[in-house]
Image 1 (tube, rainbow, N blue to C red):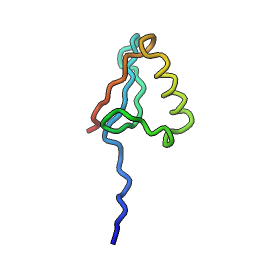
Image 2: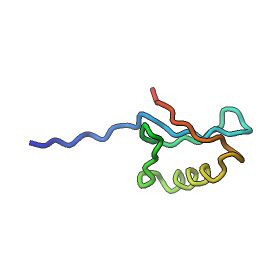
Image 3: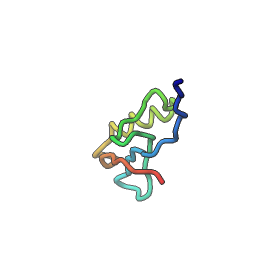
Length: 69
C-alpha cells in the first residue's frame, strides 16, 4: 500500500539582501540547492522574484540559500 507524503513546509529560503538598506531583503522558499518552485509562488511573489534576479549587483547582493529554523 502506497502512502502519500504530506506536504512539508520549506526548510530553506533564497535571500536577496539589499545593497543599500541594511535589513531589507527579499526571501523566497526554495530547496537546498536554491531552486525556487515558480509554479507555487503568488503572482506578486513571482514578480518580486523576477525583479530581484534582474537587479543582482545593482540593488541586491547575489542570493544566498539560508536554512530556516
